[in-house]
Length: 187
Image 1 (cartoon, one colour):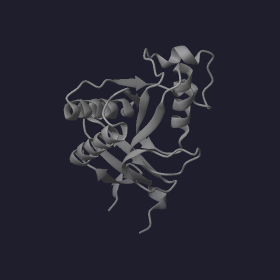
Image 2 (cartoon, rainbow, N blue to C red):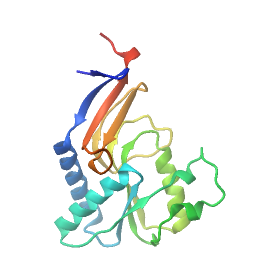
Image 3 (cartoon, rainbow, N blue to C red):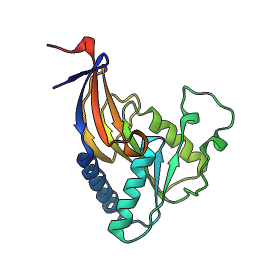
């Protein structure tokens, strides 16, 4: 049931435990896919993707009894709707991706434009062995042919729905909500 909240109706899709379980599952899938942690680099797309990447890094480090670093990755200057003259400096990341196995991590996969920008940014840094994508939520509606390798949950949405991910690190609570505009609710 959707609940009224400031001209929108919403329902909670994931609570704190659901998010914890999804991150654990994605972490195990990444380990299995990579056959361990050798040459593995996690890139968390700012803002909430970097916090998800940190949690995945901690989980994998715990499971594999190793230390796996993650790196915040800001690709906004590589988007096709933002113009800038100095894209390399805007990455602000000091790692080599050459011949590495990368996992891009984001909170919600929607049109694919952020991932497209991320791929462009990565290739300015070098040529990785492979790049995989993890998303906590896949809501569909691609404009670019992008498919995640690891997904917390597929949530088919309409264009008048919005997925909001809240993370303790930023919002003080872990939850995922689906919002619908009030004018589109069928009674």
